[in-house]
Image (cartoon, rainbow, N blue to C red; front, side, top):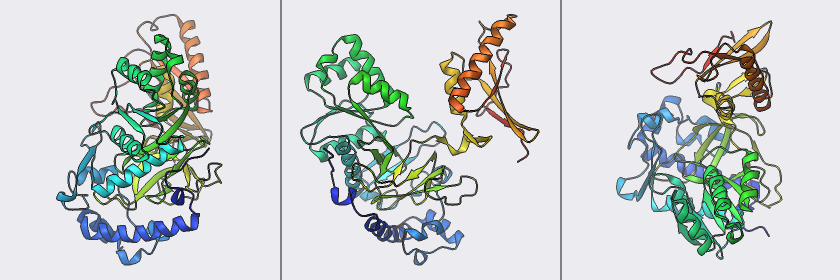
Length: 432
């Protein structure tokens, strides 16, 4: 039986949802105009004032925010309220430079926990469940987000955090955990550990809510089989709230976006033009009622599709597909979207180190794709036949992943130029 946390919102008429979004957007634009000088300056530079925004149909008039803006405004430049009203922060890992620090008021935390409560109930949870949260706590949003949502639903919550697998399994068995919340990779590891420990018959899990990493349908099937559960996807990012921006229902055909709190757009990452529903493009989010860190038209860099077909679960929220990759590294080759991360995944799976170069060219009006891969020291020899066999194997694996032919050339170890900054993975010679 389908369960809802707030059915009057989750199953609202789309026209009513649009009305809610429009009212909140107008209020939010005024809030940002009056309280965030950084964004007000961007609006003024674009010649836009709050009087120009009457509803979501005017959203396209507003300027974008990007990760570069967040770095420039660090740490307090995008805070939307007095510091005394902020009760918590969360932060990204900062692997690409300055951390993103997001600020939360009590109202923001209440809104966020509503979102994750919806996700738990969409996965079949209710007050009778035992929710084991194995996402990290602290600055990372995962643990706190699902923890608070579990409280809202009324579940018994096990705030395990990540790691210490022996203890995870002990509590899972002894306390009868029924819903698991963690990264998909850790869920897969727990499945292996349960099998090795011979305790599969003692596990009472029925569902898992997995996010914070990209994962495939193949991985979903493996996790479902190993844990005997139904595995649900969840999406979020620190800049908005963390997990719960969108969530999967029993249909497992995309994640419902909490449209009363977030407006999603798909844009062409090059032209910044808003694309029609069903188009592949970059996902952009506007937070409609977050006070402490209000994001308007934030470019996520995630590539995906939005669609609003009728869902068997009864929810009317628009759905987003799994992110396909990042707009800042997407190549279009012979009309196909290709991401270096896809090629890297194949090479790692085949046992090669992640040192490679992608060369794209156009010959006789047709795109060509070549992947140069450094050999392992063991393979580097005069055995040309063996090298040729490995190249053919990689060609087949890449064709299966990408859907198009890629020439593979194995090169000597350390022959691909190193860079002191980010590695130069792609050389695009096309004149386009």
